[in-house]
Length: 410
Ligand SMILES: C[S@@+](CC[C@H](N)C(=O)[O-])C[C@H]1O[C@@H](n2cnc3c(N)ncnc32)[C@H](O)[C@@H]1O
Image (cartoon, rainbow, N blue to C red):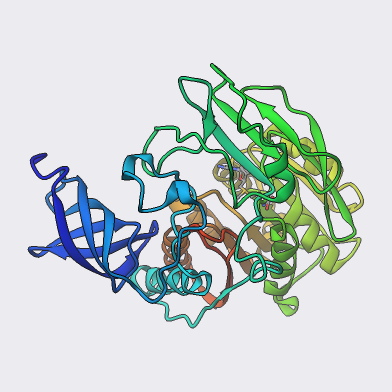
């Protein structure tokens, strides 16, 4: 293997796969093609032929375009550039916005069907303002990397090559204005640019020490570190708050149960639960990052029944299983568990522990459709059924999609 790398081939791509790449075939072998659209015939350059079962390629010329093809929203990421010089982070920027959502829907529906045996008529909802802005200007934070000459930019897709840029059209106007595109940052590694809803835009240079900032969501203010996690899309905190509130079945909700907000960050979704069910709601937010948990404790202070615990979710659940009294176990069985894991999903151990604790309902917020589908399948082994599913285009012009799944005990 290796002799085909760099070879140029003509392919018709048939369907979209997880990760935003299209699937074509060459002499019977699957080829994953970047920067193509299902239905198109493209000339592609093989970039990886090490595997027997599939190769990877980059589209370099469109021979028969899809009706959904558009000029790329970010010229530095377009097919006109050498694949190794295309900026990463906007891999759907050459596709009409509505069709991006259709492709995301297909990946989500197919993952659930294939991995969990669940049929879904989910559609991917747009966030306010994105249609009018053609999906640009939504990022309230960006991370740029520094190249050997100190210039800043994203990495190229599937690479560690920094592509210096002079604009970032997915970033909000405030983030764009604050980004020092022409300055040099030799030796720093990364430059983060944030524009919180409260106060001025700011830079976080390399390993700079965290500073506490504030973000407003509706009437509520959250305090968090400028180095910590916060939902990126301008409208995401409000959209997820509303989606989680709507995803909870009130008939199955008990405010005095041992409700949990797992992978809780600074408490955004615990607050969503508290705001929906009132001042006496009991909810514990569990988060691995100690500084985030400190902020969560402050952000949740008005609910007497709220707590924020620092710990890994798998360990937290294991300890609960070992130490919970009979009364606490009953409160866990009556609980609603919101979980919002990172891209890898909750996984076998956490889903099994939840299955044994057997809470009344799970609201699973997922940023990876395949991880969600795997975890829905695991939940099914413990008697949970996918009752409702919504999906949101929290990341226009990328392949990413967010889903909110309601799982109920049968
Ligand atoms: C997708 S974020 C969600 C945060 C929060 N729900 C929100 O919407 O702002 C995932 C969070 O899980 C935390 N995390 C990652 N792995 C974890 C683990 N094994 N146990 C606990 N928290 C974890 C991360 O630090 C991050 O804050």
